[in-house]
Amino acid sequence: MKYDVVAVGAGPVGSLAAKYSAMNGAETLLIEEHPVIGHPVSCAGLISVKALDECEIGLGKWINNGITGAFVCSPDGQEIPIEGGEVKAYAIDREMFDQELAKQAAKAGADLLIPAKATGLRKEENVLEVTSQGERLEISAKIIIGADGVKSNIAKWSDLGKVKKILPSIQILGPYDANDPSFVEIFTGSVAPGFFAWAIPIEEDTARIGLCASRPFQHLTSMLKYHKVVSKRYRGSDFDPIRGAIPLGPLERTISKGIMIVGDAAGQVKPTSGGGIYTGAVCAKIAGEVAAKAIKEGDTSVERLMEYENRWRSAIGRELKIGMKINEVLGRLSDSDINELIRRINDPKILSIISKYGDMDYPSAVVKKLILKKPSLLKSFGLIAKAMR
Ligand SMILES: Cc1cc2nc3c(=O)[nH]c(=O)nc-3n(C[C@H](O)[C@H](O)[C@H](O)COP(=O)(O)OP(=O)(O)OC[C@H]3O[C@@H](n4cnc5c(N)ncnc54)[C@H](O)[C@@H]3O)c2cc1C
Image (cartoon, rainbow, N blue to C red):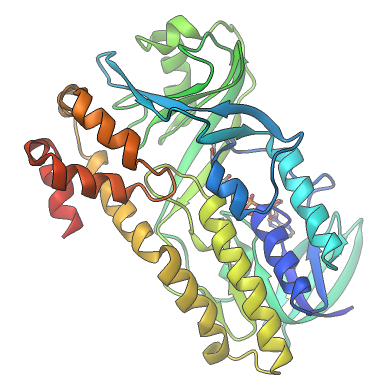
């Protein structure tokens, strides 16, 4: 088989990259190793209204719940509300969402091959070795887009290195009496050292409850049993957790000759929240478009593909860099530091700044605003201010 562009991985990023490649005139193939697109799911499925727009998908059966705000909970159990006032985000069904995006790639003209697992790459010729239903195939491509997720083989086989940090995660779906089913709940501190835990209500009495931490299973069982707030709201007894991982800190280089790496595979994920759908979608569309243009021009060299590298870095590179610093700094705070920080934030003026300027896709904006408008917070944010210089 021969294609102009092969996108490996039919997650949201691979599908969007394939859609943009096909839309821009390249003969495009999208392959996915699993027999059902979007399954298994390893995602809390919280995306902003802006992310939904960026994915060009709109409202549909993949929407579980509209989210208007968040409660941020300190280790000592203070809960502060960040009110959005209107629907700011959605809890989505990732399986249906991913399937719809793959359908749109096909509508745009991309071929789909499922299940088909890339098992090797012959770099010199840009030939992918693929296994599909027990059959071994060779697929030659002028450009391969590696959208194969956090454990990306395409990045590895292309010697593009590894993302800086991988956070193990765990999540369950369970009966949960949320404080308000239109608010997500964020739990900070040693409940999930170095990151945070969450409850995302998907309906009145059910939520996705999870966290990122080393030894995630131990942290999850302990949170469900003993956490001041979660243990009272979680109504389940046994659970069937799904595991996953979140890549933080992008690859130093996301292209080589005839290769582009995108999405989780490239570490294009917000280090403050672990959200990768918005950032991945922004980059996927650039990758698909640049791939098709490069093919039209008959030039798939590193120099030509630099357009992708430059454009995605100018779109989200700075946000990822600042996010990485915020993640590192917050990760160093003790439970008592966080209790104090949240106590200070729980001030109507500060909460209104957060509500007004908070943007889950560009969290650095609100941190900067807080530092500008509320210098008294600098004491608590001192470390962050330093990190942002
Ligand atoms: C617990 C958890 C919670 C999260 N919550 C959120 C959230 O609420 N909001 C948000 O925005 N983000 C969230 N994320 C991150 C989000 O899930 C990812 O950023 C997003 O899925 C990235 O999309 P992707 O297409 O790059 O990768 P993926 O969605 O991982 O897709 C990669 C695809 O490639 C396929 N693949 C891999 N190897 C091969 C191969 N060799 N051959 C063929 N196919 C292959 C895989 O099967 C998979 O379908 C969360 C992640 C985790 C782990």
